[in-house]
Length: 357
Image (cartoon, rainbow, N blue to C red; front, side, top):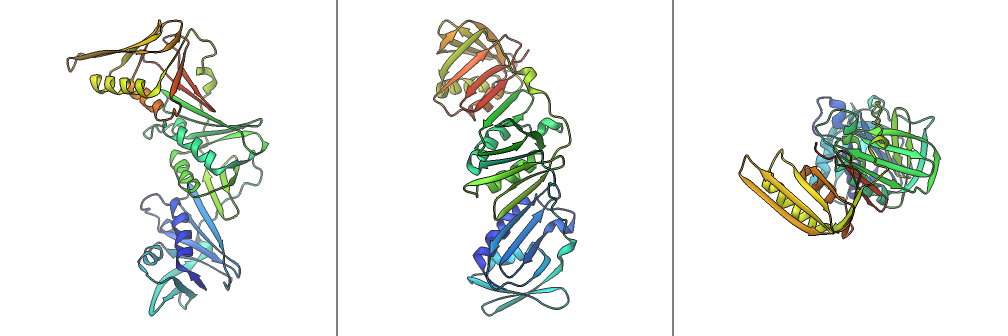
């Protein structure tokens, strides 16, 4: 098979996103390459998720084999534009480019872990890849990477014609709602943080629509030339509806950048483990912090459009996570009481922050 080096390198780069560091299992340090007269498919896996990418070619032959990731490293060093890849004797692949020839050991393609398919999906969704990536970015940011419970994952749910994606660290919760182009069925899955991050790496390189399927064991995302499979977390996600306030006793709207600056300064005052107090009402928010350990205290006031009054306590690091997601110039807060979650809403997104008690 004669193939453009850049084409093959691009396929290997995409498939390689499924690898997570160095694996103690030799098979996970390899690619599966399958060719036919008209196309080439490259697959890589870490067992929890796999990425297969496809490219149309001419002049290929029927073959499938497993090759070391050293092949990927070798291609990066070659200066020539095309390579000839042929199957030699004694389980060897012959790679010829210009005057250079290399031999790399290969294995039977059937030895590679097979990608599972979803025979009876719970739901099928058609959505723009760019919209999905933006939603994942907003929810993955709040997940606690050290949490080992189901909340360390990303909750994806199709209900009616709405797709909801949820992430939380148990103190901050972010829910993004999308309106898919195509929907079929209903259901939900949990993806591990690592699986979601692998999917995001690929979404950043995809334009146009993508097809999602959720099943009891696997979740897939695919286009004509890209196929992602991720194992779902088989646990129950917490019922987030229980913590979403349905009543309000006070509201406030402030300039986002100015208020974020105040929170950052208060975070410096108390450092780790402290809290800050918000006093809302009378057209302003008074923010105060005190660190008895470091002998520091501060208070700042910002103008706000307010309704009602409330005093509530937060960790500043909690709310700094919120500012990473809010894009509007103004941020709107909705309060129920000092012991209930603070609600912030933006177009298509709900953010909850639990107060300190």
